[in-house]
Image 1 (spheres, rainbow, N blue to C red):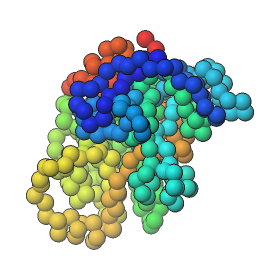
Image 2: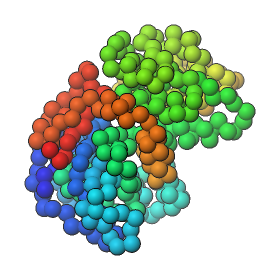
Image 3: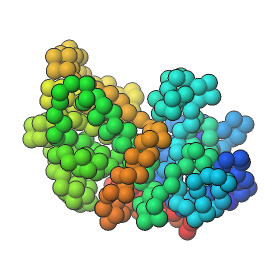
Image 4: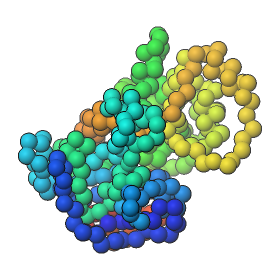
Length: 350
């Protein structure tokens, strides 16, 4: 089989590698790769900033945004040849910690989790792969063209799940949400917000083109001025920060309605200094009973929630989110970010 591999922490090492076809173990599915989504984490790994190879291996098979078709399934499983599936990214630590033991491996307490295509387990960026049946999620065949969006959708399914749980701590009104960033994460946040019948606002730097069109197609409002102007217009009860831009993070923390919730999903680069009034931030959070929390990864329940969200979404809208499909043989083109990209997908079956 062909696989997209890297030497972790070595920039420029990405290449197509010929590997033996995988043999499924007990309880595993054998899957034909259909598509692989590319995200910022993949770019960081390719650039040598991140990533761990499996124990004893020099190279890591890249890819965690998966979509495949079952070739064989173990007896007694809920899967059959031909089923469309997505593989879960994270695995619980072997100890396990309390969270992992409770099935909440996205909330691992000791950091000993592993992740497909990221940390110590080969990813889904190959023409064939295996996955434990317990860590595979079946999709309806009607989602084949957009099912690769499943993993990023799980991130927002978890974010909204936690937002709603936090909101239930006291009387709150979650009527308006502001999302900063109109990339795949921001757009999926907007989709799930619109499915919750909220008034959705999205802020991004782009003034025209596909991103504003996608936002407006959801019935949401698009902003391209400053975050202060956007906040002043919509007065959000919830802010989902999806850029990782340091200044936006702190602006969001100080500008919700009383009892507001800020969910941070963007990962900020390190080494950049900002001047902030820490006392003013503290004062805002305390006196208004605000909550700021970070959210990353997802557990099996969030995969189920994401599947429901995708099934309920307009297929045409989801297809427009995928702006480029690149054959595996031209993977370097997929790793080259362009200004008009939203979601780039590698076609593993081409």
